Image 1 (cartoon, rainbow, N blue to C red):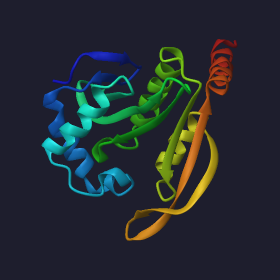
Image 2 (cartoon, rainbow, N blue to C red; image 1 turned 135 degrees about the horizontal axis):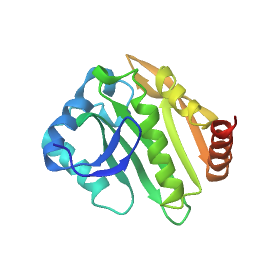
Image 3 (tube, rainbow, N blue to C red; image 1 turned 180 degrees about the horizontal axis):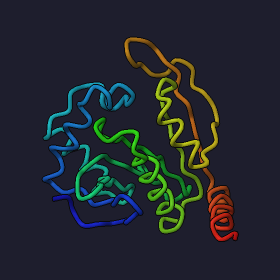
Length: 189
């Protein structure tokens, strides 16, 4: 069973990562459908190696790594890492197990962790990077109000070719404005 609930959403929970979750996370980052668009997972990750990476993210105050769960089942991972308190910035990263993709879990998980970043960590800006061929990831960021800020041409390698990386950013003020508009829309008769 995953760790305690850290953030609760409508359909998912973001839970702390515990030692017994390392097997799920290792299986995920090695899955061809996940690793093809994440440069950090280009080489095989065994449990011990992933545990080392996880310890660097989870045990520091420089980030948050959470397990995405639906109905008590592990379905993915979401991170704000690294968090730079001096600048008020963080990077958003996420993946969902292929068996659970297209269910809206990535969007909800990112929405929850972005709110956590702006409300509780007092961040000013959250950035994200995705490979150009990863249209689903780009749609998640755009649904959440991230602005496309630029393209790093052929700076990544996916599916046997060099591909562009798309840079996205969201400012706290933009997030608040979008949230207020959403709340007004929901409360309108």
